[in-house]
Image 1 (cartoon, rainbow, N blue to C red):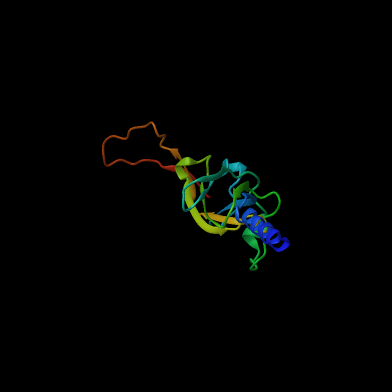
Image 2: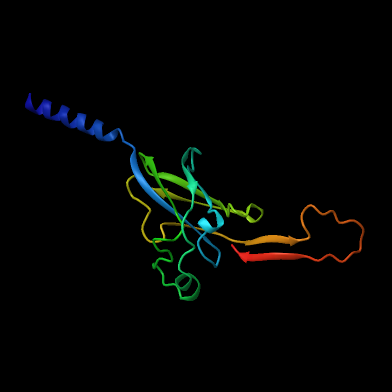
Length: 176
């Protein structure tokens, strides 16, 4: 009788453990511009979406906030494999997702939000294990290429008629 009760208890425990519970898993996403600095508050950040790559379910959504990072570390010093380019003040988006099994996650970054005429999109996927946070070092690093281009002249509302014609063009162009 005791053996039967023991076996039933073990089966009950196995059923309990088999019904997986959602586990909060922290993910920090950082968006670095190609060969430049982090996309943060000064450019209104980048829109980050975190989805289940297989089902399309939205797991989290938000905007990167924070500074552009340490210029000396990012732009002037040689990078050593495994060393972080970011610091605590560097722009990031922090999210907590609830997953109950290893999940293929897709992160998409779109920005800069302050310069939509120059905005670009990047996405990447990776497997995320419940309870295994992706927060240390540079966490989940994304890279967006491009330039921010502001046309200063001619103004957008001017219609140019007749050709050929000399047109003064002025633009402010900065690295993303």
